[in-house]
Image (cartoon, rainbow, N blue to C red):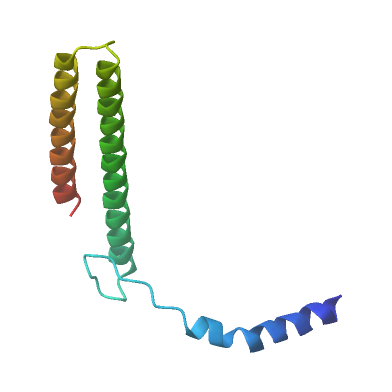
Length: 112
């Protein structure tokens, strides 16, 4: 078994050299630190990851508010809600979404 593993490892290294050669290099973080300063590189990747998570939360909130607005429009068309209630929901949802977007932009400035 040991000989099989060493033969398989040698065959793997021989065949996969070209595969690894075609991979792109990792993109540096947005703060563009020196390559020798690992602490700054890690901080940059954490900052970029945090901003990405904030953007994902914002997108999920936008989709959630859109779903609620569409559900209210459907209920208003069926006569279960009045159109004024739909307007209040849409305007309130837009205000909440604008506030969340503003707070995320402010948080992105603090993280930098």
